[in-house]
Image 1 (tube, rainbow, N blue to C red):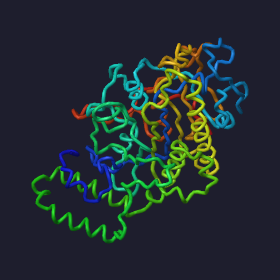
Image 2: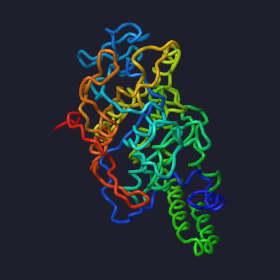
Image 3: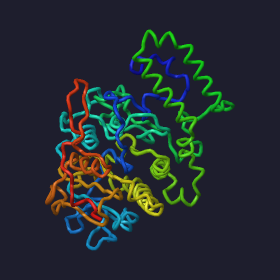
Image 4: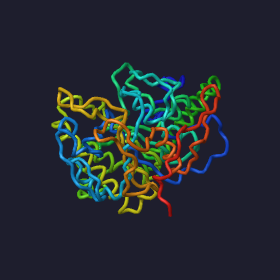
Length: 440
């Protein structure tokens, strides 16, 4: 069921989860505000990437802290990255590296929730998403800027962030107290697959856009009685259905999803893997007009409690290649100033290698990397101590990062949204990090 709508009534177009479309009816339904002047591609390395082995190595520490990897020079003088990050090291002069992220939650779900919402109003334990959650950034954008448009305002790919459980719904990425109508639009599937064609956006063979519109008209007639009996739900359903039709017929999103339009060289540049091709797809979606694209790693991929060396030799290089390719590509296309790239996990890893040759959860200090979007390039902000165990200077909370994100998107972080009881809440309780912002 979707907001009380039976499955049979909401499957007419056979395009998947219509409730996830970024076309929404605002509870405040008034004048539409001016949309953000920037876009964002948000990489969430869910599971908790190790700051010490990636963006904040400790080459002079003892071996059990330093870990199995050496460090390498970057294009920023006196700044080093882990040896598995040569592509990121090359473009470091385009990056804004925060080495002093911190919060108190050691649980994956709680850490992910605060990373996406900035909210500390939670327990440090496993749980599934529910209707009282604070909404994620994509849902907030959908709520703040309602109205008809031919592409979703926010997209998640290539899957939702997932957790083991009955619903598999990880909190922080949905509409939460704003309602499911404000959920981002999820585009599922591995874009590196040769058979990649998201079924939710395909038009059945022989069904032309005019015929599709005619079918919609027929369905509207058949459901006239239902509209009278269930006016509120039907109104919402009509809006979703019309938005879905526009997505299919307009073609902008379908064209963006067609990676065959990219050269082999460009696809190789990003890496022929799930992460690399997802980031290439994210760039294409931003070009098509999507304003927030979230890349979600699957099933806590970066959770390395054991065998870290072997695991990282497999998962770090694709991330390093794809991330650097995205930044380079956006710069080459003149899109980097107008597109913010965020590369983060929900926390870091323990400063001491454990007895399983891995690292455990560590929210006390970790790293987040930004590029483009008006952030100062080639800087490192904040630092961890000599062991990578605690913040040594300039602590940054997820709420601070989100406040700065909203500011760079052209939205006042003190903007208020309303929960189900109509209580006003700011979209971020954090402080804008002025030293990170480039000044013209």
